[in-house]
Amino acid sequence: MDTNTNARFILTADTHLGFDYPLRPRVDMPRRGQDFFRNFEYIFQYALQNGIKTIFHGGDLFFRSKVPASIADTVYTMLHTYLDQGIRMYLVPGNHERSHLPSSLLATHPNLFVFDKPETITFQEQQTQIAITGFPNIRHNVRTEFPNIIAATNYQTQSAGVRILFIHQAVEGAQVGRSNFTFRNQHDVIRLADIPEHFHTVFCGHIHRYQILRRVGAYDSIPIFYPGSIERTSFSEQNEEKGFLEVGFEISSKHTSPAITSRFIPLLTRPMIELIIEPNVTTKTVIPYLKEQCSIQPENAIIRIWPGSPHHLSFIRLLTGPQLRTLALENMIIKLHHSFYPDRQPLS
Image 1 (cartoon, rainbow, N blue to C red):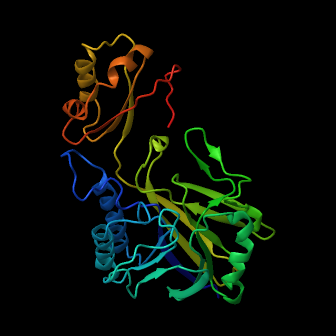
Image 2 (image 1 turned 180 degrees about the horizontal axis):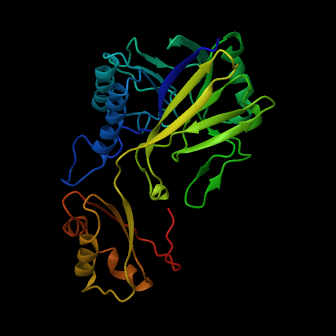
Image 3 (image 1 turned 180 degrees about the vertical axis):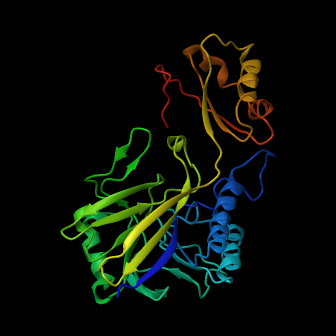
């Protein structure tokens, strides 16, 4: 008789909490810090509303390794709010954290599991044994170190219905940027062929674009999930939709491997718009021109202004921060770029 069980998890990564979140801002202006916190909290609310008990965070919880204690405590306090309600969270420290989370008295919780060393952890989900193999980000030469690090996790000693490799690294074939740069043979890239066929899937952080890669083996195709970042952190991500993943596993007594499904859940993010000044704009007309152009953009946009002609460089540097802020709607963020690209196709 065929019996089926199902397990559902959330996969997120690269939340970069603390980004653009000054504790004592010198200027009263719109900032993006709360956007990151808002989307991060939404993921936990989604989990509770949909009966999902386990969240995987693929690293770069924080935007850098040394964050003010108050920001670290704000993040950990938010986590406690949801972990106290029965959510479990598994996390691999990323490169922004320099492979270690910021210390705090609030940094521990019975439902928070941090891979601060190579290891394999097991737990029960819907009567299915889940084995997670992970390690903190390897910042140097992961291509050479990976086989030894993965062996140190003792992954082969654990039998389970679902076996997950959990990492914060670039994997061969991952793509980033407007030009679709593809990671291939660099020293900081894991070879697809080096991922053991023992695993049913790989959960990854580090790459900010949502994508699914495949490691094709002798027995099956292993999906490699990148949920991407929850917010755009640069204009190279201008056209990328941001969100997180709900990943499901259906375990059947008739099959040795689980059937894996995934669903990308989009998050609300500010649009990023590049505004290139028209060549005929002059010193006298630049402010009215920019005001008009900004007025027709979404009110929460992040706008980057580019000189559209060489003669703009003589006066655009004279635009001050207060002047730029008069151009914006209340919730708009405006940035000024001091370079000129003759092809009018600026790249980050």
